[in-house]
Amino acid sequence: MATFQPDGKAPLDAAYHHHKADAADLLEERADDHTVLVATAATVGVVGVGVAVFEAALLPGVVLGVAAMLVPKYLPRIGTALNPLFRSTVRGVYKVGQKTREMVAEAQEHVHDIVAEVNAEEDVKNGGSKKSADSAAPPSA
Image (tube, rainbow, N blue to C red; front, top):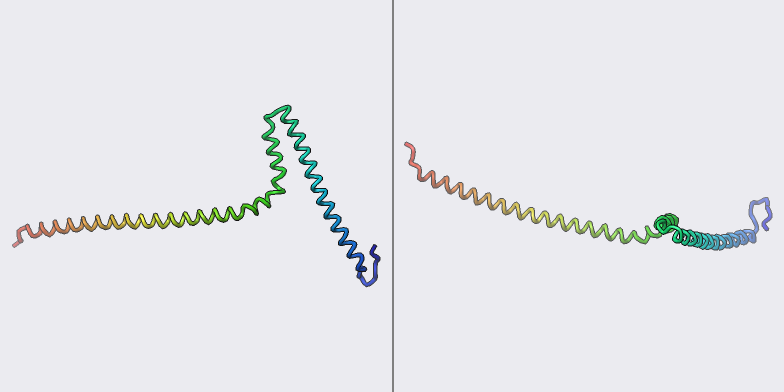
């Protein structure tokens, strides 16, 4: 393998062997992950069958346990996949809120217009009555 050299530089073939070893380690880790996954699935299957045979009421607990075991591994992927859905939902709700505000403002404006018309009609009636009462009253001498 690599020999120590006083200048601190290892031979080129040492770096190649190191890189080759890293690739082999990665392949072994992937194989280990697959093996662990298969072993876990087999264990869960055996426990599930045992629970189903002895006590079926425990099945929901087993399902929740399996879900709790898988969540940390797959939650980042689920979050990444749901991010666009979440964004589009928030945008849609925001647009609906804006449209609702516009509709409420328009309805409020119509109500204010109607109230102003009623007040104007009242003023005309009251103002006209006062003028007719003033003209009907005898002049004070």
